[in-house]
Image (tube, rainbow, N blue to C red):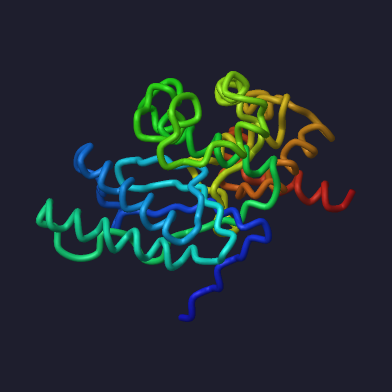
Length: 253
């Protein structure tokens, strides 16, 4: 089956995700993480690509990159080849380290840019590794509130108004509904965030108690945000039949 063409960003900004092959762990210790960041910095800087944000998890990586010259694929290939060589030599692993092609989502405006930065830095919080981004050492959050190393922090700091405002922005309730969606589906790990943003200020617990037009409106908002009927059912406790009936009423109205 032919590969789908990668969506091109008009702004040059991309949210990129790389995952371990078969969801395998791609960092066994901090030496591996440092080697990855060195390969990342070298591959991007030599091709004129700015690293805006990054976060290293155990089996995947999130990056926010500014690629004005259209060299993203070349840079990612160089970086992953370099790091895979390091990882295989050090660990004795044989075969591919990363799963297929990297995934990317174009970032087209300032609001999406800020939401993507917040999403990337919040990854370890959502995974239950820490309570706030500052407690996790392997993300660019510390470059924003401390000394920049490989990240270009000026654009985001200018948008939010400086370091103090960035810290407040990073701790405020995240209600943008942004999630990493290279396809049409909302990933399960992002479903609750997307739902809460779509129906704010209604809580998920309250949806089941709503009546009439308000329930129709709220359920329709969740579906319009990209959530599947199954996800809406799981998050709200409202049955599939009731959800589908509400969606029919919304379309008829």
